[in-house]
Length: 425
Image 1 (spheres, rainbow, N blue to C red):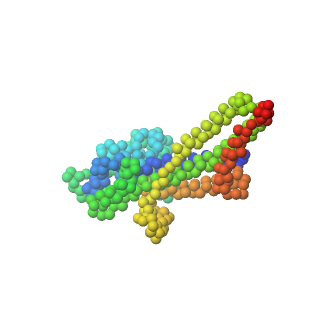
Image 2 (image 1 turned 90 degrees about the horizontal axis):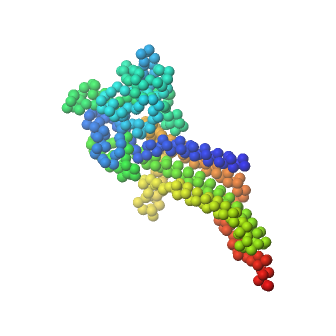
Image 3 (image 1 turned 45 degrees about the vertical axis):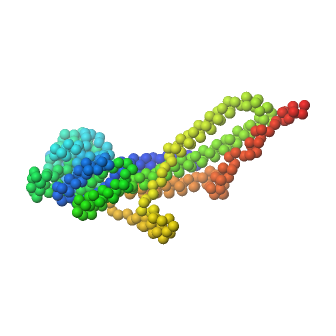
């Protein structure tokens, strides 16, 4: 019994971990990422207005990462990192706002000095999170607090930090650049709006491989230099596919265990039928045990319905990286080279500058370790439950052959001693 409880706890623990990983990753599904150094107004607008150029772009955002110092009127200081955002980044970050609101696109358009800080920063300066409407300085520039959010302290969130310290993260509107027609583009104030940007695009679901190269070529031609687009959609879908496979494996193991129980219970029912047929006619036996048969029929039907239902919900489609598909299946050298290149690519982990890339990669690694852990646990558990020295495959094969015995079926139609006696009379 203790072993069964441990097995159930492992399944519950695995399901919780899967949920904690899948939810933040699903936010980044159908997402492209570009990191580019923008130096003038035209380059800025090229990325900003691309949503109007391509109907397959559902949402976009741009932000810059900086470091600075927050200070209040009493002279307290705190080193922070801050994102200059255009108001739509929370569609990709999915921050939990506990007080007030996030930066709106209107704040970016109107150049309003709003700031969103985390709960830790609010407690540092104001002793609680009730600080909406309070003023605070960032790099000696005054901002009005419009929102407070709760930091992501989940396992995936902490592993995906791109900084080593425990500093807070704040959000302010981007310095909106002005058109050269309205202002001299060489002015120092306007030049502050440019620099290294991270651009995110939310694309139409299922269009990842179709749009990838087209968008990359479009920006490269218009920028006059190579622009590298990172397909976050493929990485996330690949990780979600692993999660789907893991869920299916869990379901498969549970289904096998349930079928083992059904097999044993069905054998008991057959033995009961045999025993009753030795004393009664077939119709009398059915009449005496009708409630028993009805209850068993209901239980078996319900269990099979549940298995079919979850099978339909948990079955998944396999996503294959186009890079590993050879042009000719008969060319073994090409297949070998493709597989080797894919293995090298999957095991070469660069340093990621953005949290989005780190979350996808770390999420995939956690899933890989979780699959190994669950697979090992299942093998260990079944070695204890099955109690056979034969392998699991041999056991399952034997089980399928024993589910319905031919002798058991024949016994249902065998005449009882009483029926044979009446025939001789």
